Length: 537
Image (cartoon, rainbow, N blue to C red; front, top):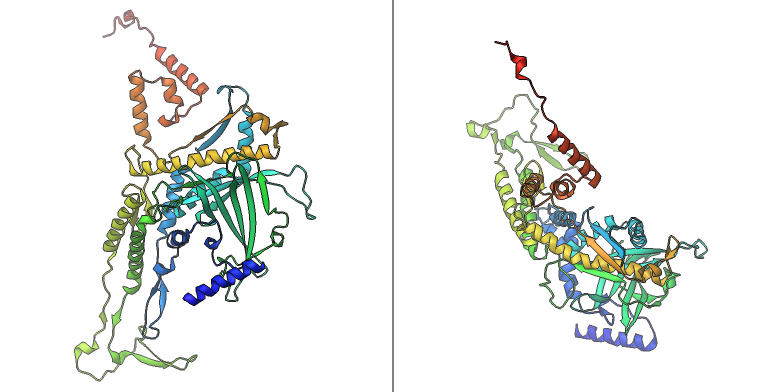
């Protein structure tokens, strides 16, 4: 082993001295990249496998048979990792989450729309920000974090010429295994590498996009590597960088290095609110189920046992050996023994023992209730470990894995987890909006005839409004509003317009409704003359 490593270092030094491109086995062997390989191998890799649904060390188990002592089978699994990330993402990022930008000095109640906000909303809409952000939050929950970058793209025709007025601002998303931080401080990640891969012509190509600072100068550097596909099949060798090659092999119009005059990095990284207890020197976050791995494994083992309970517990009948027939398989020529359950003819058996003539039912009782109880016990532990309230996930015989609709209070564990996650996301979204405006100024982007640079010259304000996304008890909110109105602490108009209290009327509709209520209260019954009843007995 020592000789191989020494030979490897010698060959690498020779390659560097002679100009021959050396083959890197891992991105962590590149200069300037922190040694996070252990964190990636023991953390991000198994987290991603579980998010996809199949983790070989857990789900490919030994199942020996007489014919094949080394036989393996796939464990039945619940796909709980995907379910919990999807559930959390649905509460963290909803359709009610809004991003607004306003120019400084502009009145909040101005009649005309804010052109700067219109421009930002147009960029977000063209990049499907609402939909992609929901996916990014789910992926971040699974792998510990997500990186978002902003850049300017110009489309080209078939001859490679730039199409006039085709430039647009793009937003990209990178999962934790596609982004490697290289510099950071206590507040944020300032430098990093975006990793993207493509397969073409029997090679795996890996593009490394470095975002680095040289003093006050922001530099984006691109490097391309390729590794030959093995003949064993697609998928092999794709994680190896291989040798460096010219960008023109895949990206003919991509510059090797671009220098930009900006004040901040053109990317943002956000992480889960869970502290990284795997590598406390890393700025990366950990999966929400990073500290629930054993429980996840136990749940899959229990679920596998539950499924196999029906397979192994199927009806079995013990019949006398003399009632077994033998026939020759026409395909293999082997003797096959079977019991003909449809044979209604008489059988003559040479025995006087009545027990040997009995056909007995040897079926076993299924342990359904025991498995369901065990699964629910593990699920409650899992909820506690990932930051959900107990009972958020449950299992029953008819519906399988279920998610409870929780009535949220400020003391709810789920509510606190959602809010903490949103606090991590908000600064990243603000940084993305800042990146959009920075790129727009760099490339002289205009909006409705006005340059974006002139719109931001006087300053601007970014407001990110997050909704908790959790179903709340509507009747409780209504009762709270009625109490506040009755105590004189809130107007009836606020009660009708505030979405919290379930009415969600516009200002005009609320005003009309209050006028109708006032008219109904002023209507009196007609006066009745007592003399009209004289003479009536």
